[in-house]
Image 1 (cartoon, one colour):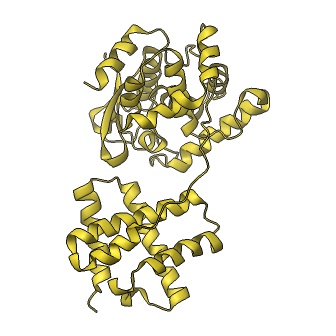
Image 2 (tube, one colour):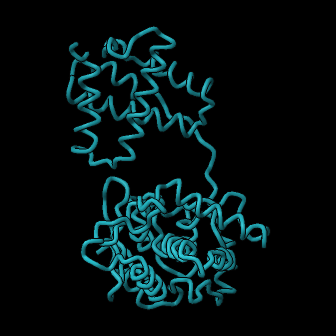
Image 3 (tube, helix red, strand yellow):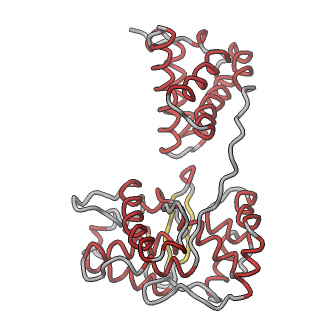
Length: 339
């Protein structure tokens, strides 16, 4: 059976345009794929249109809006989820305008569907004391506990997104001066971030203990599970939650209500900001494309920053934590990141 024009263009969009022309990450492409997969299911159940029969003539603004409303009504999708689904259609329509000019009018109508306003996202972060307490929870007597300590420390020290940490291979970390980690971020863009000496020592011990210093292991995942497969996002989230629950039970008053792996990234940004690091350098350190994304930390709470700077003599860093406060080497590195 020949594919419909919709099937042909959707396949080209997902397999060539997104990864080749736009250079989007595999995670984004999978998200777009899921959007259209659920959309075709909606068309089958609600419109009695079989996926193999769906054509571009069927795709119009009314149908997309019905789909989005169906997501909210039956799947209880929140506004942000709805916007992610709509973004996939917007991207597909921009692609169609270039590849199939006859569809420009319908594409323009779908592109005019507005995003829904979402609630302002609050930044959950850990204070210096909370971070120190959390990093004391892994049992360093056990091999698994030592792995978890290195994982949590690196998640914080590098400011990595959880997927960036999951994707790290042994070859991506350098323990010789200058110690660094190479992170692959959104859009498959890479950046190199510095690692402080205590973090480097932890990594060296971890690599040596797990026989990862040999050339044959360079392409192994840096963090793996008991089956020797790389830890997934869910696996890392489980580890964070495990130790977060222990720490919260001990000192509930100093932890935020929601403690996810992304809290480590927020915490790193907030702490760098409190120590006086320029937003431009924090932007490059975190891998943000636009400085406006980083400015959210500056706008987050001016009073919090003022108080933190006034009493700023505490450090979370012990033998377990990478040092960065008042560290000229780190500040110099950050200044050079964007050059």
